[in-house]
Amino acid sequence: MPRPDHHRRRLLAAAAGAALAAPLAAFAERYPSHPLRLVVPFPPGGPTDIVARPLARQLGDALGQSVVVENRGGAGGSVAADAVAKSPADGYTLIVATVGTHAINPSLYRQLPYDPVRDFTPIGLVANAPVAIVVPASSSVRTLAELVAQAKAAPEKLPYGSAGNGTPGHLTGALFESAAGLKLTHVPYKGSAPAVTDLLGGQIPLMFDPVQSVLPHIAAGKLRALAVSSRQRAAVLPGVPTVAESGYPGFETTAWWAVFAPARLPAEVAARLAQEVERIARSPEFAQALGNLGVHPAPEGPAALAAYQKAEIGKWARAVQGAGVTLD
Image (cartoon, rainbow, N blue to C red; front, side):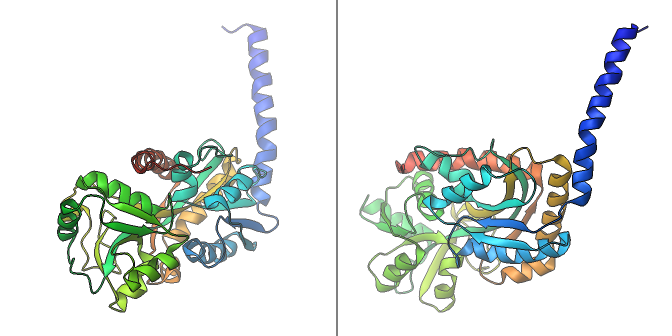
């Protein structure tokens, strides 16, 4: 039989727990009471906007409050990610995180001002897009096997372009070099647009870049896609094989977008946001809003996102190490 003092302590502990839970429950009931900020860690007009704007519109409808998209570029998305990490954990500031901000940057930058796991609450994965391996339509290379043969015949002689050091295109190229046992020469550009311009003009013979950047030129017959880096073929390029089915089983990389909040978000608020974000990501309206640009819905809840992020951090760390690139 428990002693009276022990019983009294248990009652006091239970009362204290109930006292703490009551304000949280009340907070969750009236959440949200004013507009939310959805931070995009890049300037307007990029692929992250393709995901963020329909998501903000639908999330606002679901919550009964406007969700304002705030574009905040700088340092590969790190400026925005750091600002969100340091924001109040009240459910009113969210970020559309990318594979860069929450998987690549920890290995790429020597001094990252935030921890992509410890400083955030995962809400949900919402979309992804494969990297395409493309050549000019005039190129004699028609398959990935032919590209590999050409590269192995002249090690380090074949250049490939990307949107810049540490981007998904660059690091997918580095992972492919490792998988295929070859050496290419990386040519970094300041964004996809100038790299695609040089590819179309014949200044470079090859490029690795997320499919949405090169898709219009593939559709116009100016570029040829040799393969895509996703596990399954891209719906917008059904005739293009994956790298995995081209002789490299298990090869997979994607650019991806997910919603995170600052760490220590109240559980009730996190659950509400996760429920709404996953429902939106599964909706036909969201898929239609993404359009036929190569960005696909990829709905996953908080637990699946956390596990996926952990695996992605490890995979991209190996890619960064293989590429031998770090940024200040």
